[in-house]
Length: 419
Image (cartoon, rainbow, N blue to C red; front, top):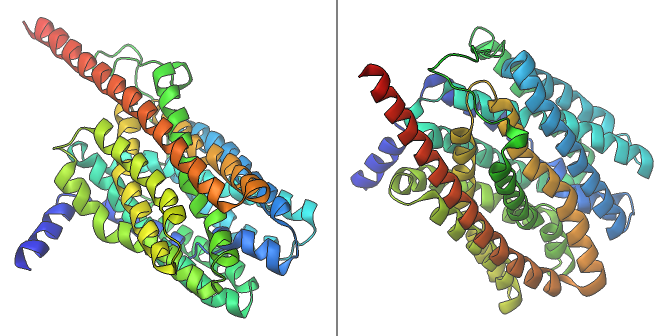
C-alpha cells in the first residue's frame, strides 16, 4: 500500500501550481456537465421528438463546436488564452438559462448551436494555457492532470444529472449554467495577474525560435487530425447513442444511466495519471494511441457478444481504458508539433477533430440505429476502429520521425554555430 501511494505521489509530483489551478477550474466547470449526456433523452422523452430530430440537434451541437474551436484557436493567437477562457465560461454559463426555455425545434437547434460555439471556444484556449503553464518535461502529465479534473467532474455531473433529471430536466440546465459561471469567477480571481492576457509574438527572424509550417499547411498534421476525428466519432457514441441504448434496450432509469456514464469519468480520474507516469516515457506514442483505438472498438463490439447488464459495466471500463491510452498522447503530439506563435491554431485544429465528430457521431449513430438497429452500429464502430488505428499508427510514426529529424538538424546547426 505504501508503494502504491508513493507511485501516486510521484505521478503528481513536479507539476506547476498554475497547472493545478487550471485543473480546479475545469473540475468546477465539468461537475455541471449534465445537459449534453442527457440531451437525446430530454428531446425524445420530455419534448416528444423522434430519434432523427434528436440526432440532428446533437449534430448541430457538433457544428457549433467546430465553429467554436476555429474561433477559439484564432482568438487565442490574437488576444491571448486568458480572455478567451473567461468569455467562454461566463457567457456560456449564462446561455444555459436561455436554453432551458427553448422548446420549439428551430429555436432549440439555434440555441444549441450558439451554446456549443461559445462553450467550445474554451478548448483550444485551455489547451494553449496548459502548454504555457506546464514545465517542458511534463507537458503530457499536465494535460493528464487537466483531463483527470475534467473526468472527475464528468463522473460527478452525469451521476448527479441522472438524479436531477428524475425530478425535472430543467434542473440540469440550471446546474450546468451555475457551475460554468462559478468556474469563470474562480478562473478570473486566480489567473487575472498571470500570463496569457496577451498573445506572444516572437520575432520571425530569431534563430532561437525558427518559423514553422502554418498549421493549415501542415498536411501530415491535417491527416493526423482527420484520424483523430475518426477516433472521436467512435468515442462520442458514449454521449449520443449509448444513453439511448441503455434506455431502449435495457430499459434503465435515468439514475442508472447517470451512474454508468459516471464510471467513465471515475476510471479516468483514478488511472490516467499513473498510466501516463508509468508508460509515457517507456512506450512509443504511436503504439499507445493505436492500442487505445483498438480497445475502444472492442468495447462496442462486446455489447453484441454478450447480452447481459453486467457487460455494460465491462464495456464502459474498456472504453475508459481506451481513452486513457489515446487522448493524453494525442494532445502531446499536437503540442510538440507547434510553437508559441501558432499553438492556438494547432490546438484549434486538433480540437476541431472532436468538434467535427460531434457533428457526425450523433447523426451517423442514430441514423444507423433507426435503419438497422444497435447491433449493426456496434459492429460498424468496431470495424471503423480497426481502420482508424492503422491510420493513426502510420501517421503518428511519421510525425515522430519528422520531429526527430528536426531535432537532429537543430542540434547540428547549433553545433556549427558554437563551433
